[in-house]
Image (cartoon, rainbow, N blue to C red; front, side, top):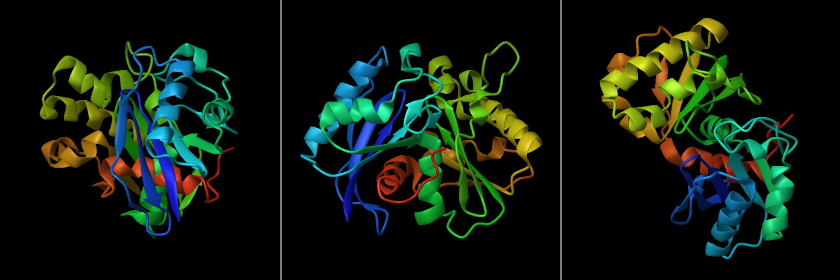
Length: 249
C-alpha cells in the first residue's frame, strides 16, 4: 500500500509516497521551503501543494515539529506563536479534502526507525533525537512509543531552551565547525543521559548523515547510533502513522 507521508520542518516541508509494508520510498522526495513566517495558513497552503504534486487522494500521515495532542498543537515550538491550540489535522483536512493523521515529528521518525530500521527489536528505553531546526526527541520503552517526549525544550543558561544553542540550525546560524557544534550537542546528550538514563540513543534528522564528522565529540556512556533511515525517517514514519496505531495522547 502506497501512502503519502509529509515531514514538516522549520526550514522545509517534504513529502513522498511510501510503501508502508516495506517502509521504502516509492517516489522521489518533493521539498518546498517552509514559509518564512511559519504561520498556519501559509504552511497549510504548502501542504496542499505537496498533495497536489503527487495527485494524491488517500489518507495522509504528517509529522509536525511541535507537541501534538489529538491533532491539536499544544506548543508552537519553533513555529509562529499563532499555532498554539490550532487543530492541525482539521486545518490540513480543510485545505486538501483528505484525511490527515498528525503526530509529533520526532515521535514518528523514531517510530520509523523502531519498526523499519536499526531500532527494530531494541529493548529498554530508546531515545530518538532528530537534529534540524530544533532538537526533537522520541522515546520508546521496549518498542512502545511514549508520546511528546520533548527533551529539546530543557532550559540552558541564558537560553529559553537548549535546542536554540545546540540544534543544527545553531550550527548553521553561527557558522560552527562540526567539532565546535559537536561539543554543544554532546552537552545536550549529557543532560539526556542524566535525566532519563536511556539504554540507547538513535540520531536522526539532517545531520545524522554526517555523524562521522562529529562522533568523536560524543563522550557519554550511552551508545549513540545514527539512524540508517536518516532524513527519510520522518516521511516513512508519517506514512505509517496514517494506517498504524501510533499513540497520540
